[in-house]
Length: 137
Image (cartoon, rainbow, N blue to C red; front, top):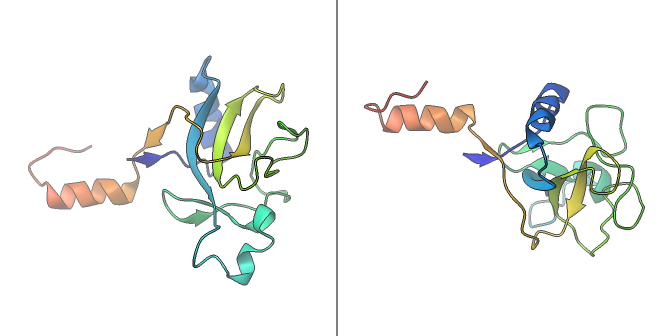
């Protein structure tokens, strides 16, 4: 399993219905801020440099109209991602933490938060091939 990726509104709605009173969770959202991230299509980083680490899918631009649920506010009262603590390279879902609903926030990776994981088809296929005696739906 990997940390959850939220690539569609349907996935987001499903997750939101299950958060309950949980204040925040980590996702597999990640800022591409390491070796190999110098590609032109990742710039500017805070707009085009985000991806889902669980499946390497690039996120939609943070300022675009395609699906994304970045918050309009945060600890610095600025639109997310805001790099408030310097480099905030991880993405969390915060549950109305800043009176903004259930939204995405860039967060420094050293914070402790609960996690939500999901199976991916690639992992399931790997397990099916390598462990043929185990019944995996």
